[in-house]
Image (cartoon, rainbow, N blue to C red; front, side, top):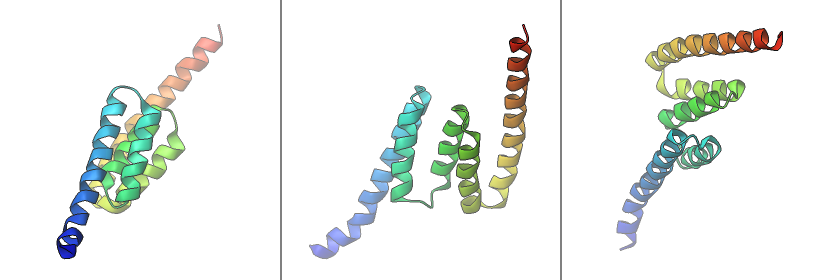
Length: 113
């Protein structure tokens, strides 16, 4: 009986991590970014080796305008995923920073009126 419990423990931990991740995604889709980050952080505590959780945490941080924190989360995802993820990340970042720069310049133009 104890052996059975020991064998099933990782499965329960994995399910809990998946539940935290899925809840984080659902909250992010509703625009509840702070709550989504809390769930992603819980998923990371359970399994810090899951790159998709780090990536989605980075995406939510980016949407909040927390660019430095987003980069840290993306770097964790890159370290876990390797080369192909790095290429995707760099393409995403180039576009994301372009959007941020355009947004910032638009804000500066409006403030001159």
